[in-house]
Length: 200
Image (tube, rainbow, N blue to C red; front, side):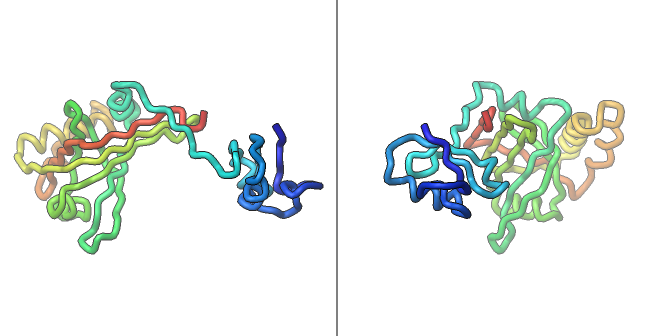
């Protein structure tokens, strides 16, 4: 195996100031596996196996049951909720969540962009990730339904607040959040992608 750098001396693959993409293109005529290191600092960290082109990252699929534990782990992670605005443009916002079986449950106001989109369409996506190496994530899509039942509002507002603010503040936050125009949003999932050790 040869180690090739975008900057260096000698050879078509080692020409000074050649970008990582240029180096790959120059090496594409050879079938020899090569470890290519880019010339600029951001590219030096992007070391890839190559046989003429860069290969895709090899994600590791999480074992069964892992994603539920990841989503409900403490300290609680916020979910990043993706919806579409009325004009079709994307909108992403963090939300506090909990699970009810495999359903994702959260709360939002009917007056927010999130709430208006859910009432209008119902299709949503959510993502959670561990930002520490070697990195893991869960991404889900599904269809949301809503409820404004007072008992449900108080139950879920209190339960979700306990996850994020602690049991000692759950009741106070529950009473604060269980008021109109808040809604309980339940997402029935139709696709789950859970990957672990992304950088390993």
